[in-house]
Length: 125
Image (tube, rainbow, N blue to C red):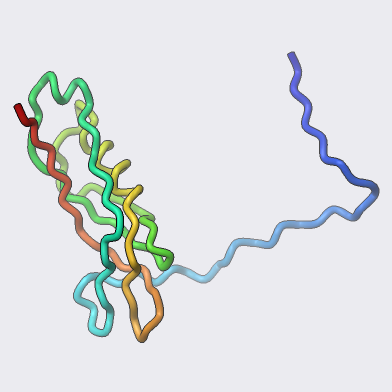
């Protein structure tokens, strides 16, 4: 079976998409003078994988995350791993990328700020 995509229109001249901004993103670290901390608005808890539950893996993953100027989370990296075998580090990253913040400010303008986040995994019951 073949799939076909078609674009309607006549003989209009094709356009070239605008190139992405080449200006690098300045990322501030927590504690930079004049930069306020982002404020957490929505937190998503990480999911336990069935393998991690079966093996009763508990503890914390330490992450570094960049809160972007729109309050979403950009790059997330693991600073201290809990588990690379059963997927808990990955679940922590997935959850963190869904968080939403009020962005940090510098001189009244939103800026990207790198924060550290601790994701805890605890089995109850």
